[in-house]
Amino acid sequence: MTGFTRRQLLLAAASAGAGALATPWLSRSVLAASKPVVAALFCGHIDDNGFMQAGYQGFKKATDQLPITGHYKDQVANDTQAQIAALRALATQYKPALLIAHGGQNTDATLTVAKEFPETRFVLTQGAVTASNLSSYDVRQEESAWLAGAYAALMTKTGVVAHQSGIRVPPGLRARASYAAGVKHANPDVKLLTNFSGNQDDIELAARVTQAQAKAGADIIYTMLNKGRSGTTQACRELGIKEIGNVIDWVAREPDVFVGSAWADVGIGVFEACKDLSENKFESGKIFKVGLQQPDAVRLIMAPDTPDAVRQHIAALQQDILTGKIEVEAEFHGPEF
Image (cartoon, rainbow, N blue to C red; front, top):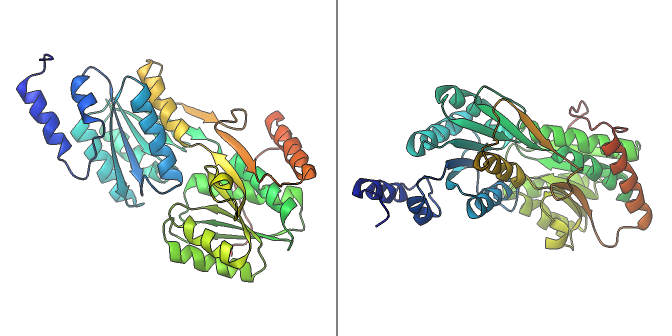
């Protein structure tokens, strides 16, 4: 055969039946036991057309292209104790060389579990924390969010723009602050309505927030939601107002509603962490950042019919961010809707 014992094969088969913990690409795992094992946690759903799906796609790309073996777990609540339990389960069952927690909402859980498994290397994507066995890989979505705010302020016809998100995680808070700063920089007279509803995936709740923001005058809404985004989009469609998306290219996906999208391929952080491990270049205790200087990772996508003057203005603002003339803000102190 391949030199594997009957016990090894039985253990691999047992892992495949472990319900809550998914072992994609298992046959490859069994036939390549010498490859380093990487496990990943995705809170929420890996098919959410948003943040979690982007992270999962980065993970799948890594398992497809790199000499690693991958395992993951999704559909975990955005609750610290649930995240801790999920990370412990991944660490215990698969004994990975690297364990990735996707998203800043996992900060406390990752810090806790990293202490419990000192021989395992950990990565927090969209994070800003380190430990002796923990690094953060941060795709700076706040930079494209800043440009999205400026774009909204330049494109609004009512003089009122909005922002929607669900849970208050550090990356989402930073992106909201940057969006608000972009609005103010481009046109300080534009009013901003900003809301954290408490849920990334509630479609009906997102629709209600959209209706309320539209009633208050907003004609462009920047959304940082997961499954809940579809509620905002349908409400925008019915109300005849526009939306700016994030993470992926929403302009291409639903051009009748989206005038822009703050592209931030957060899956790149997942992929790069796996790549560093596979090339024996992984460093613990570091924070790695990727921003507008890498357009395949971070950029603002604008609708094809965007006026040339607006495009030129956005290009100039982007250059100012890249040269440090504009500092992307990380905190917001204004009123909330």
